[in-house]
Image 1 (cartoon, rainbow, N blue to C red):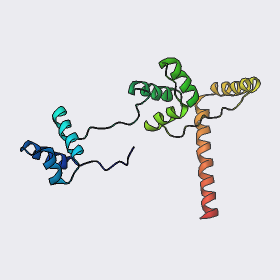
Image 2: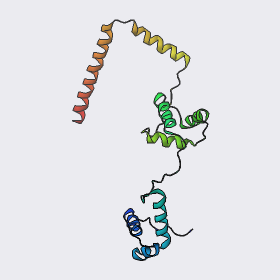
Image 3: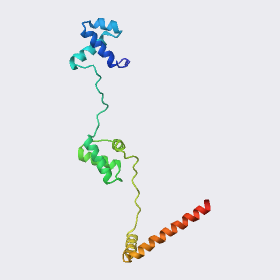
Length: 171
């Protein structure tokens, strides 16, 4: 395969077609514009077929997943942000019957503004500690509303005191 020359501008193509329509031969048009005869011929034959000299939009590689399937990924992530790319890929393989790489899923998510998701590590809490925490929380449920309001007020006072101490220390 030879080296690829730059694409001919649309204005030049219109000029070629204009000369040809005015009755000039392909050889004469190529001599006038200093373009090869084969290029002039291909531009004119394309004009005869399509009626236009505009460059057609070229697409890259076809997408593996359709826009509808991409929305499915986004929905899955909004429901459960901690799901991994590999699990999403496997679910997509089962659901759509399409094999893909987890990086493809990551690219889809990045295109929909889901960047650098890292699954959060969940703390391990033993059964005994779970029961103790519930018991602690339940004892505060039985307290009257004034108790919780006074606890919140006390917390605010403590924060204000800490802020004042910090401002004196560094201020």
